[in-house]
Image 1 (cartoon, rainbow, N blue to C red):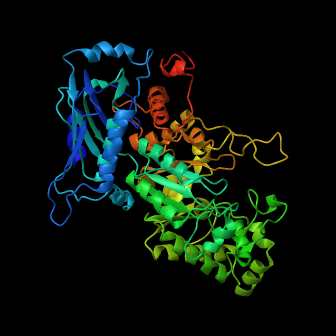
Image 2 (image 1 turned 120 degrees about the horizontal axis):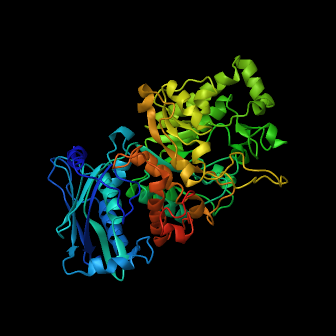
Image 3 (image 1 turned 90 degrees about the vertical axis):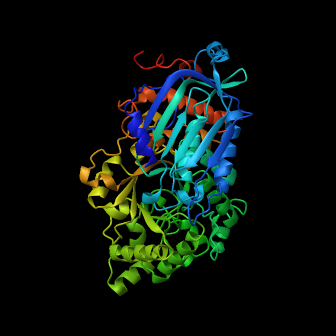
Length: 571
């Protein structure tokens, strides 16, 4: 394989952590030199050369061409100065020497025999078939740089790394550390970010900007929590009455064209869109269009019937409700090419059903327990999804708190506590880490419920990037179960978020897990991944994001960003 060949070579080289460039996430193998090298952005060419492959097109896919165009634009427009005192002014003498070479080309190719697919096609393959590995060489003598991969998705990841190598001062684009040799691949197949668009609505433009930021950090899954009790903005063909009465307004909906726009934009950036329609809980808003399917709708006090207002859950014991829900999810599944679809399943409130006369009548007449009815409901919805090729995804309660039948390939998202991952793995389910004690981005903002002036958020304290960065995906996971850990994601529940603070509450914090699940436990020099060496590199990513219009929040005063370690707690 292309990755293993160069990795073996680089392992022989002396590898030191780079001092003037700051890659994020850090590659698996990295060798850098100390020779200045310039790049004339306006004249720089990125070319592709694909070998003939019998039966498959050798033309450059359109989305790879678009990725090349984006990289070319970033090289011209980023104008990213090194984060040092003086902003790189001290580099002028080094790069003004007549001996400094100028690189004019990056040549990209796939390995011989590789199937040429679009990036978007690669991004939605089954997880075990996705290949994001690449090799990148940037010589110091001005000859062409080369980028090689097994897939167009790998080439995209390599382009992202290439962009991060370069800095700008007085009209010059340069690096001080040629030659550069990188052999890279992700440690985990799932690296995501979740956005809730139901508590508050986010226009397509905000989601696209978020996808841009995700791509910068090599995140590959956009977990879209599209609906909840508060609103149902997703317009599902055949069920348009649900969003017509469940959206906040006619302007706050995602039409099928909007969904296609988001899916296409994500796919071009190597991102799979995993949609979630949470069931049977968190569904009060469906009462607006189908009151016959919802129990305890807006019951009071809400705290007796739900974890947050408004109360309302699908009547899971009702065959009619199960059929309605299965049909709704089946229709929604056709909007998304992802192999996955989440049916949620968290925070089910038993009292809601205990107090619902219709549910009790059905249970009594059929002799079922609530758990048996839940198992039948989930089975019906999952069968509908599997009929269109989707693998179901659920929250951890479906495995740990309920006695229901689930197919063993169901993916389980662990959210309540990082301590629960091991229990999910022991039940032999594949899992995605999203623990609230490390990865919830909304924590620490205070209570959002009214008439509670001394209240705090339930998941206090605020989760800093450095807290998230200390997460160990394999903590308490046995060696025998390690293969069940697919990766992880950071999550934003939006009770207190909207387009006005989306960028700042998410970035660059959500990039911390990107490195956890791409780079793994160790850095290229063999040292453990650590917050000390990570901070200057995350500063760099944040400043690049700002250059590209992503309003990522500052991690420290600028004084600290240009003086690494001087603001450390024990400095």
